[in-house]
Image (cartoon, rainbow, N blue to C red; front, side, top):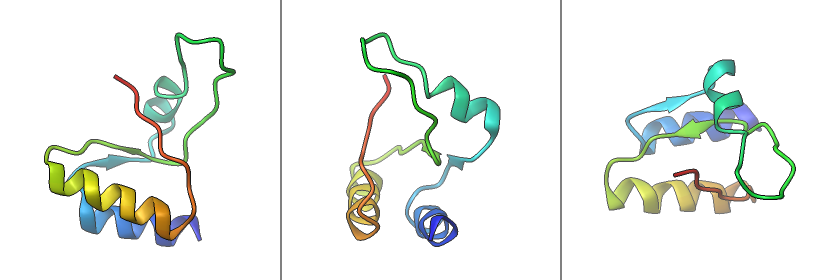
Length: 68
């Protein structure tokens, strides 16, 4: 299922990463929440890409998060 999710994200967003170093970097937080490793990191550039990401996440019932 993860491979299908990543394939769908590739169709929606120009740049995504499953690189372990990138995933680890985006797993950290400045909040009290315990860090957790994401499955994939996406780098949207447009509102259309953001909407596509949310739709893919809903399709696969995955939570959405944002790191600034």
